[in-house]
Image (cartoon, rainbow, N blue to C red; front, top):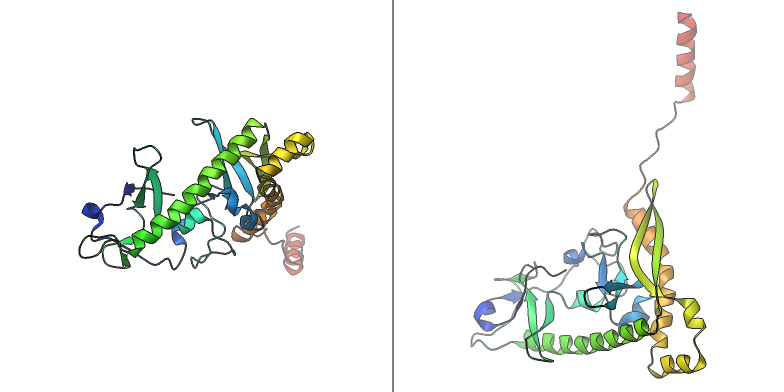
Length: 260
């Protein structure tokens, strides 16, 4: 999603502006979006929510699937409009992000300089004439700070599921044109293991307030059918060759008889 992320500073971005988001063309190539557990309830009625494994960090992260193929977002229309009632927070915060600043627990506001939303002439200024941050920066700091807290709680949620051996691979098979396509690399909560939790473990899940997110995730998997439908609508199968019409067939038969 991000291409050239750098910390925001007045020396580098004094003359930079950020355009108002009027469309989501910038997200047309995002086939997935990271989501926090706090988004599950709203996202689950639209997108399948699955988990991806980061083997280097030995952790899992939840994502909303926006498409069935890399580089394709089925929820961005040709006019750039978002074709759903909910937009994941990571897309709403674009082109801004938080990144560790080098100090423990401290983060710096960053911006994707390669984004088409960043301009020298159009939009709201990041810094005023005195070089002081504008309300744009202050609002972004507050929003990203809240989101960072949610992401921290989501990491704890995923670590707990991993430690409880709740993840299982999900291999989806969807029909694409005239072939069946396998989508692998996704993980889901194993419903059988969830149902077989001991009373003590189940109460622990409830005490941590993880159950609503788990059930929302499981219910979201039915939205895979929505993705398949959207994919089929945007990639109509090629029309089959038209059979010869009856008049043409009769003419061919007559011509063959005359040459006999």
